[in-house]
Length: 73
Image 1 (spheres, rainbow, N blue to C red):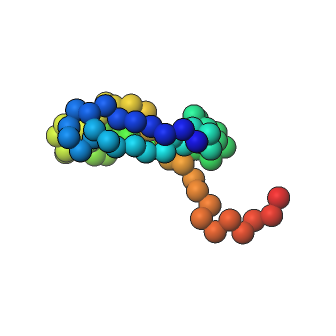
Image 2: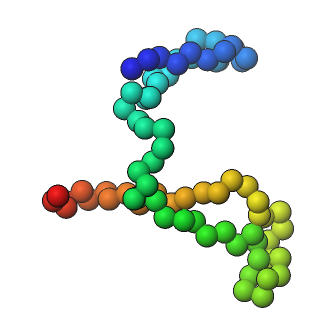
């Protein structure tokens, strides 16, 4: 694994390094484990805005994770 070095834009970042996990992670998640996340845009069932400044943004997905991992096959 490579080591990621940061640019020193603050004194604490000057010597900061972290591990680069690009060898053990893929760039895209497994497609069969993704579910859509429904957006409301801050509107209720009448279509009226009930929460200001909500809406827009990048499309997001929910990633299903099997924490027990007790299945075979």
